[in-house]
Amino acid sequence: MFRPMFDTGKGPAAASGARLAFTFDGRPLTGRAGDTVAAALLANGVTACRATPVSGAPRAPYCMMGICFECLVVIDGIGNRQGCLEPLRAGMRIATQHGRRQTGQVHG
Image 1 (tube, rainbow, N blue to C red):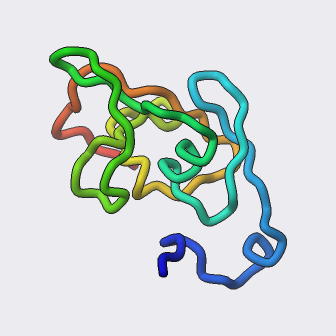
Image 2: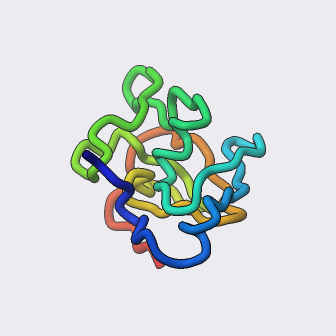
């Protein structure tokens, strides 16, 4: 019924079922090539990727399509990244997002 957004079914990563190493809050994890950051975190049992700015309650990816912003994480030192829209890359340093989302930031 569903397939990963970034899985074209072509290329060596798709054929080999490659695993990509990354870290979350300093903890080494692996994910499937073609998965998003949010999917890789959920597959590794991560139950929260950000904390609400008001109460500090833990939040986790919800819609998995970029609408709800519950999947905000810090990726390689850049905050406010939507984990459900970011393809997982080998060596990513992903961290829990704390505090409120900053607007007007430019991501390169």
